[in-house]
Length: 429
Image 1 (cartoon, rainbow, N blue to C red):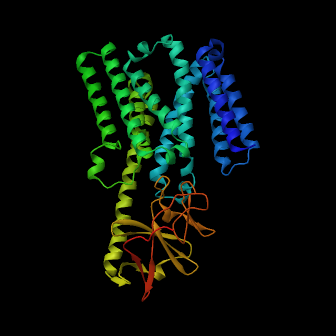
Image 2 (image 1 turned 90 degrees about the vertical axis):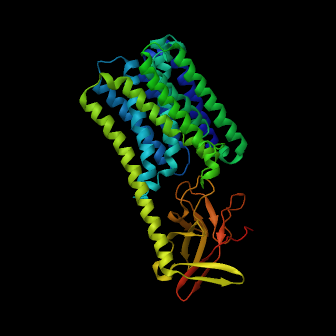
Image 3 (image 1 turned 60 degrees about the vertical axis):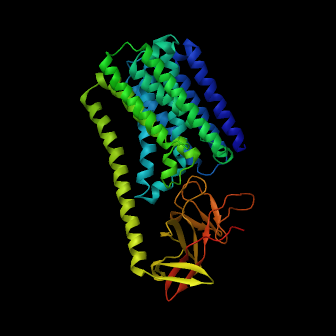
């Protein structure tokens, strides 16, 4: 079974399931059994396809199956719709936190890096669980009325998360990252922002839940979201004054932080207000874990970079060979065969590998999603990115035959046991 076939089948069955639950009352009332059936079918499909790293998808499906069945046993007094509403919300909350923790935790453990490429699978799963949540809530509690749903502020925050998750999910395809032009990403950012502003204004005009002062507080929150949106957008003036490696697709997916913030507000003003202290404690601990993990990750990155620059400054040597300037970065006895190290040369990140007693120097920034190439490995003459296994030839920094992606590569020279890297990259062949 080819890869395109298994994706098409799973996508078709999932969309059919969600639409059926939304429009057919009988399926909503028996959604537990139909959801279990869908997951079992997906599990069978994955067992029969030949895919690298399919163990992660199988593990995720098994995790969902076990969680839903366990939820049924624990909350056996709930009807199926309420049960799946509760379970899907808990699972989506948990998985979203896992997604946001993979980044900072990968700075502390190479084992975490191995599942970095799986983040988009987890993100699409969160969107599926969120959609399942929506297709049950709208018909059951609001009789398919969007106006009725938006009249509640905590539902508005939930729909904000769902709206953005939809766009993050459908743009998670690798093909779009490379084929969609920068101008198109700018248009997408702007259109989505205008839609969000329009929805927010509509919510404001029909809002009856809060008094004016409380509603103004929510308008301030929405204003902060809009400001963040503009700051990270590819048309933002911030792009003109900041040096950044983030590109259009990635800037769209940075909106995951608005998704996360909206989800927290959805939970805070909704179910958290009527739950027990244990759940409230878990809620706040999860937020603290996210914030502290990223802060510690940033601090670690700061001191790591400081150590790299201190090493280069301590060597304090430059040479010129054939009218080309080179900077001394480290003593050659500090390198291990096949392991990468990161340096900053002329304010550019460089990944350096010792390979068969030679030194390979290429840009540290993967052309795919800006992954750290120095944490990768050399496989059959190619530096392999640890995030998604994109490869670059050690001779010229270009991908394998048939792939047009290249990263800058740099000349490396050894003089008196010191490795020197050229300030400017060589032209790709």
